[in-house]
Length: 164
Image (tube, rainbow, N blue to C red; front, side):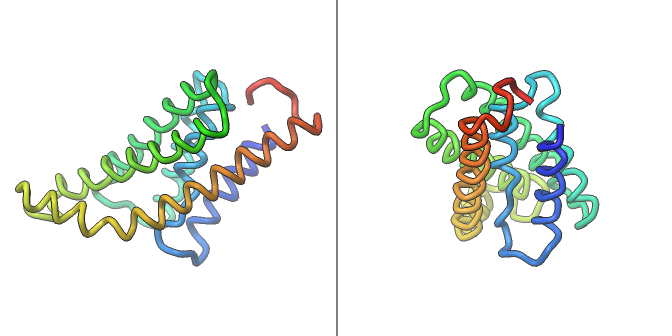
């Protein structure tokens, strides 16, 4: 329980304090929660972080797309739970980044930020590539820190082996 509270506070703070745009822990937290948190309610942790921080930062018309992508990434993490290796964690991180990129940018396009044409969709994705680079780097960093720290404490027997 204490780890959940710490993660929520840190993740919200990382969205509120000055930081590189799109350098967010949310994809990493969603994947991590899918692996280590209770299957039934684990999705609520990353979703709560996103909702609370979005309320504090300011809501936008694509929240349903960004929030739903976090739930999908959580489900991906739940599958990773039984198949966890360092290589798969890296692969799932990449896939999670792609999922967030595709869903969030489809949301931007569907909400009318670009013309609702094939050319508008292509432009939306093309102009989002620089943001993807930063968010993918953030995903790699946060996944490495979250999984690495948790596994380190498991190895040192500081944490119980049960899911949170």
